[in-house]
Image (cartoon, rainbow over all chains, first blue to last red; front, side, top):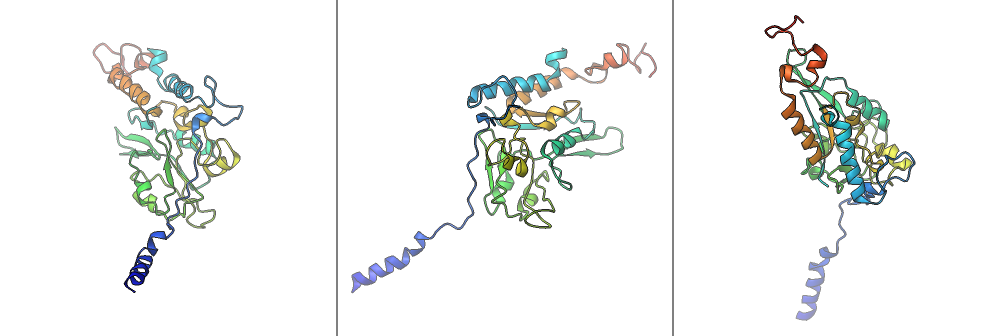
Length: 73
Length: 205
């Protein structure tokens, strides 16, 4: 009898542990940007899927496009 | 790769709103929504300063912390993005954001208060890179095209810098060390000649 009661108590007590989470955590996985778009109008100088070449190309682009001291002084 | 960062040099910003226009054009942002805007302090007073403001892609983003449906995520490059399919348009992120970045279009699924829209650092959203679905919800994914945010690339005075935080910091540091002040400012000699007005032996302006 005690064993049955203990089992019932355990089942009822642990029922909440099986509850499904109710937060809407459904953010889709985003593809990494260095994978490229596959479109023809990408900037040149890097290879889609190669993280290092993408990073390097962006660093060069930042310096050439936004640092006029590179060109003027 | 360091984190992607924006910085606006208030010594250079001339309040032309070119960044705002570039953003709206690039992403076809609807009326009533400004992912980026120019704020001017002491407008009309000598010495006024302008600064271009949008989502700053915070390292510890308050919008992410308060979102009840957890629609935000951060990319490996440190760009804070969100999933519009999960957003419920509650506006908590708007209250939490110190920059006023979250925008709520009046058209769409939620009527008066639509799903949140904000600067994506031109990195799109969770849809496939460069897809039509991504463009319609989040705008162009320039980072995946090997480009930088349109606002910074279109900035006429290069006041607004965007890119890898280390590179942006280098550019800004070089600028601050070299530009000096008054006649030392870069371009002064070209514009006014080497002998400037207001100095002994200088010409009148």
